[in-house]
Length: 152
Image (cartoon, rainbow, N blue to C red; front, side):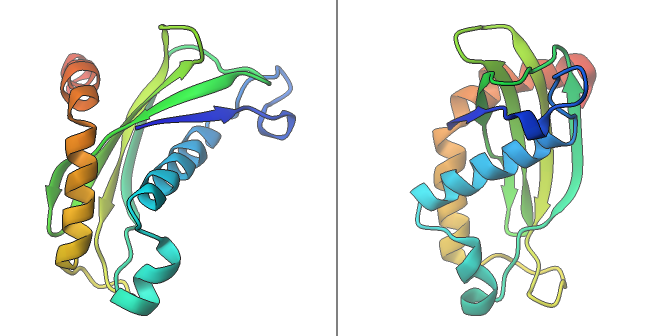
């Protein structure tokens, strides 16, 4: 999945560079949009299915800055899916530029509404598996070689 996002004035520091923590915000926004494309909504998960998908670990390698008014292309993937969770690789590019700005991953787990570890409902697993299948090319040909170099 490729999510486009324009960097606004409120997201940059004094040097007009995207604040490092905002990268994770953008990844989450993209992931939420991707979920919506597949009929999966956070608003329904806890009340209707007693499941949440919190982040339990994260990693980001920053290579080049993103500036105010840049349009970013955020490539998202899913890998290592199990009934208990998955890894969500990502990579940032400036629109029209093939040079990588940043890359990393978020580790997510399935938990109950009370925060206890649980297996995801079957339909959630099927949906996330579809997302993994859609992103296989990005994960295997772009993200995995980066991760192998850094031993992530």
